[in-house]
Structures are given as structure tokens and as C-alpha cells.
Length: 47
Image (cartoon, rainbow, N blue to C red; front, side):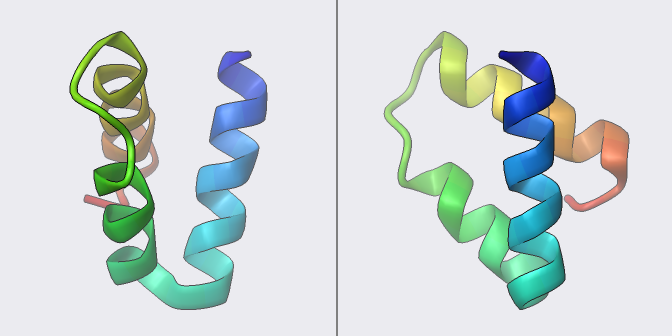
């Protein structure tokens, strides 16, 4: 699941940059999934 989310974050970044990545993450409810997405984006340098 981690690899799939990382792939989706990379795709969002290639389509719309950091702004799109942040908007996509913000669509998710607060919780474990959103926290994991934020961590993946931070590791990739997109936030």
C-alpha cells in the first residue's frame, strides 16, 4: 500500500506540482491514511 500511495503522490506532482500534491492530501480525512500520505510526500520533498 505504501508503494501505491507513493506512486500516486509522484503522479500528482508530475501533473500539477507541489500544489496538487497538497490539495490531494487535503482531500483525505484526518487519520492514519492522511498522516502516512503526508510522511510519504515529506520524504519525497514535495511538502
